Length: 324
Image (cartoon, helix red, strand yellow):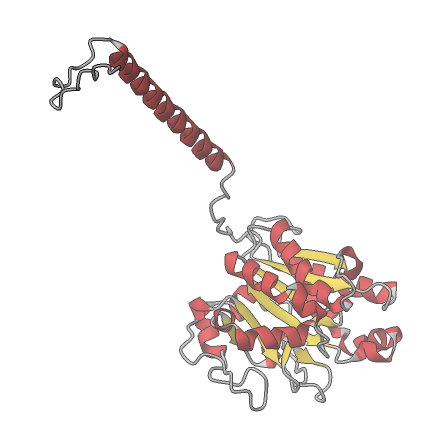
């Protein structure tokens, strides 16, 4: 028995008719609300983060006011030298500092600053104790943020001329123009890296001398500021402290000066007797009367009493300070 086929669907369906339901309108409102809420949340989050960054933003660069003009830093190795000798070195620095009051009306103790520390105050992670020079100078910059200059002077040195001021005798730009040794090998006698020939006095932030062996870090002046912080952190980098440099931080300095133009561009070499005369001609330029300071060359190598004995040759500094 045959059944009739179902009716065939038309090939021409009726045209599309839009819904009459309110559902699309409701969805549209919900979508708009979600978008606006999301935007508001993101805006609040951005404002909150910006406010947090403002509260924790690093302080603006602090420009030193120049009070005190100079801070003298000396690191003492108390296990190597006697108390009498170290007390005499401290007295030398303090007497010199008192001679240079910041203002004519300043009290007697308001001259240059002094900063004395022990090499054991800093964790050098096994490096030679002479490396303590660098964290000590950085420490002094933190303690005296308004100082214009930091003068590091070795414990084996004495200030001899109380009339000479660091900011005038060494760091004044016009004075530096006269003193700077330009286009000169950084490491004598034949280093291919030389001091810049076009450097101006106002560009200098780091002043030191050379002796017969190379750069001498026993007496140097650094201008307080952001560059000095960068320089000291670079010099004190742990990787250099792990190197077996024969002269520790001194040879590390020679290395970074030759390989970092940003440091060489701020460095000025001056004649040795300007800042760092030696007690013996064997090491470099020998002290002459009127020089700022004298270093007792290699005195500690023969025992602790050797420095104290040799210092008696230069005991005239006490009379010079009394007469000035």
